[in-house]
Image (cartoon, rainbow over all chains, first blue to last red; front, side, top):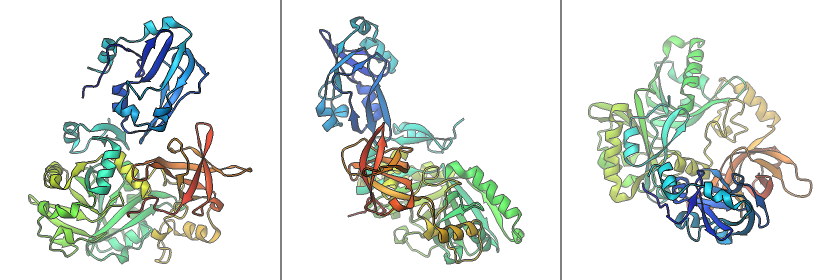
Length: 128
Length: 379
């Protein structure tokens, strides 16, 4: 099954996406990831103010079957966490690139974003 | 190399997501666990359970041998009836939990767990070798040759007769499959082969398990899916099978049960007929029943918002002197109740339904309460 890989985002190999606006990156999980997880029933997000390093596990998404770590695609400070997705975890499934976003990071190493996958590279990774 | 059932290709065609389970490559889900779960509760689902094992025990000494080997009382089974039972070691630890059906006066069909086929059969052969009446009993491991399907849900009686028209030539005396009552089994034919229809399941719903030679399993699966279409039948995977059984607190070997856990600790003492005469493990169970157990299997529900409980999470007592009192063995988000539920072992003083407990999830503790089993009961 083909899943969406929007052209305006950058991707991590571990299936997170980021949307850059200045030095703030919005982070979520990809359509492919939500499709693999199915039935997201719980989302745990990092506290605002927490500093995370690229590759650090900083959130948890739980489906009926399992708990999966979510990794920070880039380093920075958490400046906002999406309360809506905590209250309604199903947004992860229904709108992974929109209202189902997870948290926002103020980048501490802006160059790191360049090392993330392009939409074409990520599409290739997931076999599309 | 993982083993595959006769339906492996059918699962792939249906878009099933395949995972490893007990040495087998099995579908965990086709659409979603929640969809499939609710479909079984509200309508009908069909599961491939061909990974499970089948053992035939026959001969004039079969009943006595099974009463020595298993905890429940096989004498209570009339031809065409089955019972849940357990096979224990000398210490009372559970080697496996299983269904035993009497399919003939001197013939029993045992349905055992996939992951336990080898240890089970080795144990049965050892017990058989040392059984004084061994020459009167034959054991046959049919697990490779047989497959099985579980047809579960409130709608299945509406179409089961159209796929299995009979005649029913053995087991329970019925004219139609839909006349079978809970725990009954009937024998019928399929293209010249003998197949068995047992009225049982692992979901808490009405339903049937069909045990048939591996070479006709796909044909039966296809016919059932076609006949059930108008009754909202969907294929369901092991994910839904697990959430369904957890809601009704049926044990899963390797979680609630293992060789160091007794039926009494697991809350399955009802299925150990201590009064039937001697059997393997009886002395240990009698002793434990008299002196009490050091832990008990309880069901619980989360009472506030939290992540779902999972196996191996620590269970704590509630209140100011909180201490670790046990461990979760099964846990999930209940699709029927939409909250976290689970089963776990705790020290006996916390086993009473209604006891406040806490579940440790990633370093924080969340409130839960022990509840009467089953956790989910049909309205």
